[in-house]
Image (spheres, rainbow, N blue to C red):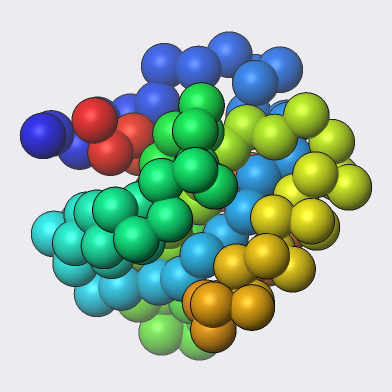
Length: 104
C-alpha cells in the first residue's frame, strides 16, 4: 500500500465525504482505516479512503485527516456520521479543502 497524490478529478473532490479522524503519520491513518473498515465493512462499501493534508496555524505543523468518500449527497454524509457516532467513532461531514493523498 502506497500513499500518492489523488488523481481524482476536481468534480470528484467536491463531492461530500466524511472526516473520521486524524493521526500523526500515514501509517497510523492506514491502521485506523484498516481497523474501522474491518469492524464495519458494510458501512464503507464503495467508499475510498483519502488523506487530507493541511497546515495547522500558527505552527504550520502538518495535520493528516482520514477522509472517506465520495458520498452521493450531504444528507448521506450526515447519515453515515450519525451511524458511526453510535459506535463511538468521530465523524464530521466535509468537502475536501487542502491537498489530498490517496491511501491505496
